[in-house]
Amino acid sequence: MLATLPLLESSNFPLITRRRLETLQVNLGYRCNQRCLHCHVNAGPHRTEMMDRDILELIVPVLKAQNIDALDLTGGAPELHEDFRYLVGEARAAGVRVIDRCNLTILFEPGQQELAGFLAHNQVEVVASLPCYALENVDRQRGKGVFDKSIAALQQLNALGYGKPGSGLLLNLVYNPQGASLPPDQRVLEGDYKRELGEHFGIEFNQLFALTNMPIKRFGSTLLSKGQFYDYMDLLKVSYSAHHLEQVMCRSLVSVDWLGNLYDCDFNQQLGLKLAGEGQSHLRDLLTAGIEDKSINVADHCFGCTAGQGSSCGGAF
Image 1 (spheres, one colour):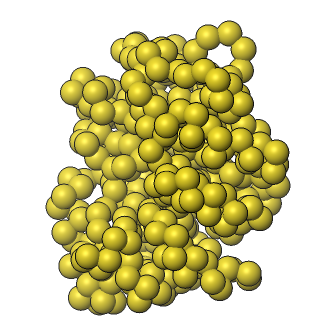
Image 2 (cartoon, rainbow, N blue to C red):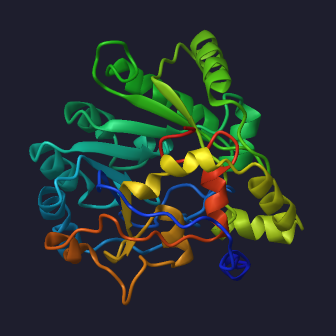
């Protein structure tokens, strides 16, 4: 895989600092039942990295110590971690909002037959990746048969109340562009998704999050191999909006890798860009000290979060 970090480190991206920590985003491991072209984590069935129980046991105490509002679980497929359900239950018992970054097809993996019911029972917010409402585009990006399984998973979640008005069960979808382009207008695209998925499959959902593809890991390597990397970076930079600096996720979120190390965001985690300062900060450090007002470690990929409409784990700004 071609590395992009050496091409991103020298950057004129503005310096920014943290505000109050509101979200703990935890990557439980890189194992996944899919291998998507746009994946910035390079996750897949062959990956073996998974968080140990002793590190996982630090998560809820940190949520309490820092008075954090939300636990955002990602991977890989976070549900493949053997302690996923234990962690969700403990966090919900502590009154913390839990978000599951779900690839949808995980609901049909062996041993996951009761997953949808578990998520609904614990009122877990589901953020589900569906990069298009057309079969050909989804299967091209995520693998043959993924679209049909994704539709079946969404119908299963709808049957439990997800995405239905007044249910309190949030179901948000995630769109990624097919290649080296910025996402279209999120509000317009959300309308298209709701119309197409509703008319053809009877599917309802709450919001669509349109995310910019980051020039790192698998997607970054693909850009380099196709000779598109520099053009894509030029697109991100010419589309930069300083207005988005106030809303970027790294101001109120910290990312935790499967070893418990801390990063400003999931993208920095994949590039190995640790929190600013000496040494490598760890999850256990948050038991006794905060990170408010600290500098954020930036590089050229940060233009991806500030280009066009802006982009974060919660979609456009």
